[in-house]
Amino acid sequence: MNDKGHKMEKMNIKVEPLSESDYGWIEQTLDKYQEEGSIQSAFSLDGFLSAIVISPQDIPPHIWLPFIFNDQSGAKWESEEEEERFIKLVMNWFYEIFAARQGQDEYNPMFTEHTHQSQPFILVAPWSHGFLRGSYLWMDFDDMEAKAKLHFHELVMPALISTPESYEEILGELTDEQRNDWDNFYLDQISDLHLMMINHLEKLSQIWHPITHKTPVVHDAPKIGRNDPCTCGSGKKYKKCCGKK
Image (cartoon, rainbow, N blue to C red; front, side):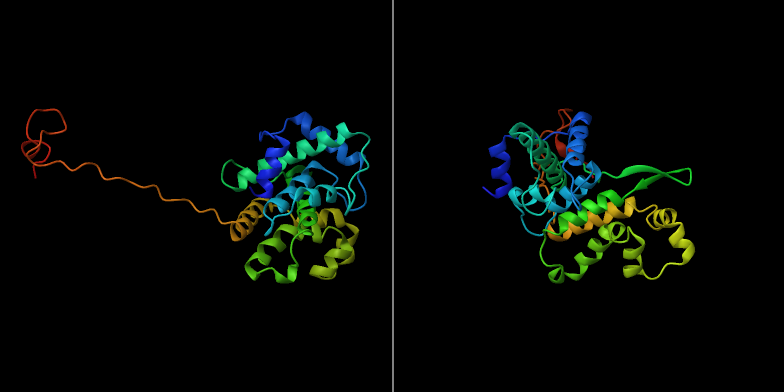
């Protein structure tokens, strides 16, 4: 049995959608143990788990679970019960995404709703930050094939340009007006990206983990002789009934 299957069986996890109270408790726990650079929201954790699920190679949970909080030891848990509950819920979330990526269920990235210039706005940045952090556990980016790099860069771009300094490093110098009104300028750069992000996530997943759908075998219906009784039940021979040319 592979590592993913082994871990699932060992922890006896039932894969089902988490409740609102589950998400709320996870969010509180992330906030309680957050450190600089760690995952700090449920939206970012969804991006992080998505990156682990579609990773080009298997990453065992004992590697990525501590990485939610820091690079090595993980959170300093108050109790074993708290640690066990967090791991159980996060692993359930992980396998929910894993099942969806295998085509067993529907999955959409967890983006957050926002208001920008008095208009509803779907903010992809927190998810992108989590996805970027999860990608740090992948292979060397220099070894990533070109077609995968294209989709990867689109998925992490909202995170990479989230400050004026990082924006200028990647995309070029800002004007004084853009710097002074950075929040609005940044949101303008990442507006209406959520559908494109979903598409790039699907494309990247398909590159590394193509889902092949078997063509169902269609058996021909038994052939009817022209002198056999017609299948319509008329009592006539097939050639004198439905088999007339």
